[in-house]
Length: 272
Image 1: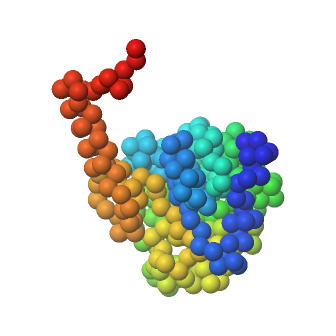
Image 2: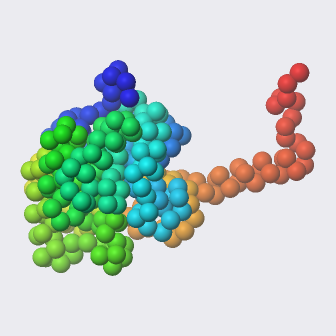
């Protein structure tokens, strides 16, 4: 990413300031050039190259198989499309678990090779030390609390977190630790709306909700979920803004019919 291009992008400082300015923060995932162009054209504030690409791009049941190479490849592609939105790369399973040195090194690859302006880290014990090490190295960090898909086996499935008092209190403590470690924002995934409001009111950095109710400072959804680009069970926390799978299927069926009937290509699609 060139200096001029970087200067036009929203920064972690600007995203963080949006909370104090009471500006709602719009976030979406993107994994390729086309989806990133759509996000940027629609003035999304922050684009996350999520490890959810395992599910919607690679067709895997969990995010655990995504590698650093996968994430850097897709982050670099998305980077080429963005002019306005801040770009954050999702650090994949085991890329920051073995210590601060490894965490900083891998976060650095997202910046130097992927063109990202920051990274996201899912919660795990001692995460505040990783967050501090990475931010001390000059790389903005977004935390992630609640349902953390990289810990799906420990959590026992994809289910709402923080419903009991002890877990909710612990999550608030961890949010404060992540803030003190220097994070510029925190994703709150699949937690009760009341707990999300409590965390949002307590920390001074923005909270970005996904299945966390309306009282966070911003929202994020998976691009393919909100456009319903893949068939399957509707998730409670997802609003479908387009029936993308059906519309694309209709277009492909129309194309197939025209090819088989000989009506495409016509004269207007041909050269002399």
